[in-house]
Length: 173
Image 1 (spheres, rainbow, N blue to C red):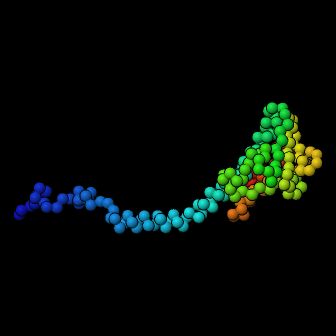
Image 2: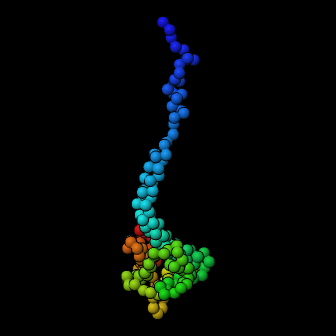
Image 3: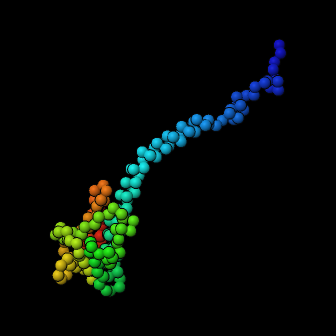
């Protein structure tokens, strides 16, 4: 009986043949690219809203950080530090411009310690760490907790920044 040796076998073993035939066809590549494109189109509005919502959250965090920094500066330098809020001002001490593109959908509202919305307010931190509030007239000791309401004008989602008398402002999502 005659046996075939590997030298005379016209077909190489399977594990050798497979390497030369690996890869994707052009149709398979186009199908995958089409699926990725459809997923990107479906996900982009959600992604854009997520980015805008993060910008509004960042605005609320920035407001909280400004009040913490003001109190820390008052204690460290031994001088009073005042934060002025004016909804109609182009520039305030807070250096927070909604039209700068970074906070494009953030709508801020200051509510005093009684919950009344005020377009103008001053919070002053003394060198001893006490806080005083002025919405009209003279400064009064801050006994309640004023808040900033930061609302996303597109989605309506609100965040609140609490400013307690100790100046340790907190951000609540």
